[in-house]
Amino acid sequence: MRRLVGFWLLVTSYVGFAQALQVVPRPQSVEVEGEPIAVAGNLYVVATPALQGEADLIRTWWNATKTTAKAGAVSAELRIQQGVPAETYALRVSEGKIVVAGGSAAAVFYGIQTLIQAENGSKTLPAMTVRDQPAFAYRGMHLDVCRHFFDVEFVKRYLDLMAEHKMNRFHWHLTEDQGWRIEIKRYPRLTEVGAWREASQVGPYGDQRFDSTRYGGFYTQDEVREIVAYAAARHITVVPEIELPGHARAALAAYPELSCTGQEQPVATGWGVFDDVYCAGNDSVFTFLEGVLDEVLALFPGEYIHIGGDECPKTRWHDCAKCQARIKSEGLADEHALQSYFIRRIEGYLNARGRQIIGWDEILVGGLAPNATVMSWRGEAGGIAAAKSGHDAIMTPGTPCYWDHYQSKDPGEPHAIGGFNPVELVYLYNPVPAELSADEAKHILGAQANLWTEYVLTPEHAEYMILPRQLALAEVLWTGPRRSEDLAEFRIRATQRSRALKARGFNVAPHFLLPESKPFRRREPK
Ligand code: ACM
Ligand code: ZN
Image (cartoon, rainbow, N blue to C red; front, side):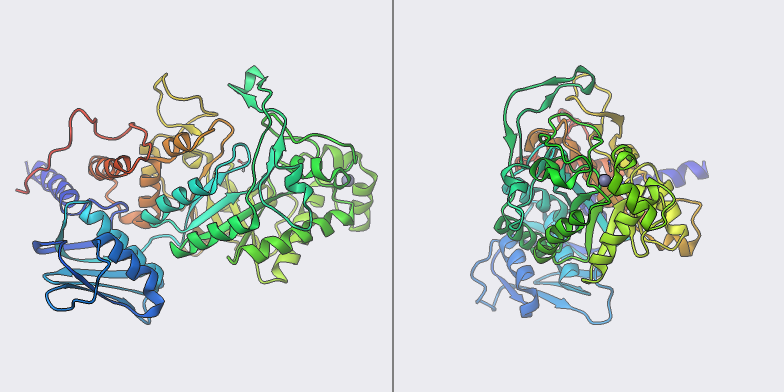
């Protein structure tokens, strides 16, 4: 009987939480203190110039363009606090006054996101104190714009979703076999030729069917700057990915002399992995890549450049006189060590310019570059090996972080690449493997969901693949081990949040959420 009572108290308190504050990700600490306050009338915002973006955000939400009337207005004080961790904030809502104080503008921004979600169109806010900080520093989302292209407007929408859920790293997968998507002024053929393919594979991979439609697109450097600035205003750092030495067919279509054979080949039309990669024995390949990276560095101010490194077959290198000569002259053991040479050489170039590389976990093979961060995608083994050898790692294991996988076993689901990553699995994910010591665990910077787009052709479909799974991952990464792990409680908030997103036109998959026919009714606290 005792146990049963305890259980019911627990359930009531979780449901009580969902009632009090329907916010995703769930803040670390919320104390509800009194009667709700009305979100109405004038808002008088006090903020330093460093917080002008945040001041505009809170005014827009309050619908307050005129903020001169101090008397009778609700005051909103936005403050950066010295000595507080950069992403930590405290939020206090009381009669006539809102205070958001945080360790940086990002923290204040997150505090305002909490306010906006808590209000959720109700025109009231609970009187409350929220104390909050993220469990993980790297809270990422990836988007493949190569298999299918997504325009600037959609990329901004994607960033909006990230920001609202307090995610802070956008991994922009910009180059691939099937398309090169970023303008590089020194090498114009990359987009004149490499951004366009003559056909695309359609339907399930095994069918090997193709349409005959020319397909492509790319971002001009002005558009890239626009996206980077849009992200920065939302405290999101863009991590561009320039794939090497593999997944390079689009670049090789533009500049065939960069491959081992030098043969002309079209931009790839089908999915998969291709034998033709950059030649590792040809110095002009490095001159080319350095030229590309110079322009990339000028566009992206963030610390990290993702250099790919995954799925690079060694077939051509094995048969190439130049690659074999390089293996000999550098005293390398084999083609795997040649890949390691390739990555180290690029790392050296980027480190000398103040940047760090991230690579997919294949960069561990043949020896890890000295300062590299590993993105673990073939399960967690790569991330574990990296952390154990003192390198940082970001977890993106296929299960549950590949969101090109199915989220439901419903036969009516749109065709996906395979796999099964339902919301439940995402929500229960812990990015820190149990076998790591506390010191090793510090190297796990966080996690990221990847949206590969072989089978995702439209913005609506992309939204369907990331929502509501993003709500679950945001909570894993922000709330972390202190989240309730109570799926029923999370389901209530995820449903509420999804309704708000749907009302704004986002295409949210129905799985996991409470059914629309049975709307959630708030239970009164006991
Ligand atoms: C990958 O999915 N090839 C990183
Ligand atoms: Zn070669």
